[in-house]
Structures are given as structure tokens and as C-alpha cells.
Image 1 (cartoon, rainbow, N blue to C red):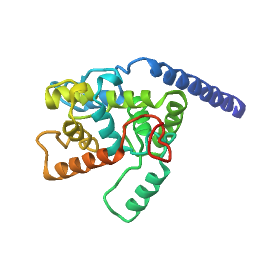
Image 2: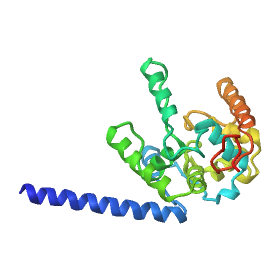
Image 3: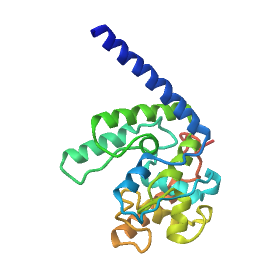
Length: 233
């Protein structure tokens, strides 16, 4: 009985690893049509709720928005391999002091969670997030991770992805967003169902100015790892 049970779990593990790798490989090239969070939001809401989501290629998304989310969410994105341990340590120390909870999740981790998993703070879900983050960093280039992230992230109540957000908040295509509009979208990401890109509260306006300042400091935008001189060459 024990051997049969053990064989069953081993087979399940093998199938899980095989299917998850195929799943991740498919999404390296195919658009992600729907995510678990979209389904959750749909079933949480009333009958008039509608998901707004339009997939576009990365080059159809403003470079300003690409840079804004990196400066806002994960400034070490081009250099790390999925996990920013300095950010994780800072978040842990901050939370241990009893301050407002902060996450240390990278764009890669957020992408893994958004595409393959569900929201939550359990150790089981966090373990799966770590596994899928490792896979996408191994099998996808940084450009693809950012493309999937920007097409799937929640940017308003029922609004998913850069194109839908640009249309919803500013009535224009994502490729036409300017720096100030891009920063306005980036600052709502921590709580997109509470915060609004326009009009903004004083808190969000101050946060937007901070993001714009970080965008100026960042230098030449590239998705290549930065060298010691701060360039991607």
C-alpha cells in the first residue's frame, strides 16, 4: 500500500513538472488570453462586470511605460535572475518592525503569479510562485517576461494590461503614452482596484513624481543587463 501510494505521488510529480514546463514554453510565444486573476475577479463581481483586456506586442507599448513599471516595481529587473534578495531582505526587516506590509516581489515573480497562479500569502502558493519564476527566467528572455507582465497586470477594476489601461484611463493606445501618463499607471499597481490613474490623490501624485525622478536617474533604457558604468552595452 505504501509503495503504491509512493508511486502515485511520484507519477503525479513527474506529470506536474512535465506539463508545467510545456505550459511555460507555450507562453514563451503565444499570447496569454486569460489569467486566473481575471476569472477570480469575474466571479467576485456582479453580473454587469466585464474584463477589459487587449494583448499587444511589447513594441506596441510605450517605452515610457516599460521604464515606469521597472522604476516603480523592480529597478533591478534587468540584472537579477527572478529574485532580488536585497529587496526581499528590506521588505522582511520593514514588516518585522510592524510597519505597513511591503512585498519584495520582482516583476518576474509577479508575472509567474499573475499567469499561472492565484493571489494569496500561503507558503504553498509562494512555493509554486518560486518554481514558476525559476522556469520563466530559465525559458523566457527578459523582453518576453516584461511583455507578458505588461499585458496581464491589473490596472483598474476589470482592467488588465497596458493597452486596455491606456484606453480606459487616457483614451489612447499604449504606444502613445507619455512619461507622466506612464508614471500615473505605474503608481496604481500596488492597489489597482482602490487607486485611480486620473484623478489622483495627493499621495499618488507624490508617488508619481518619485517615479518620474527615478526614470530620469535610470539612464538609457535597455533590457540588457547593465554594466559597471550603468549602460547596457
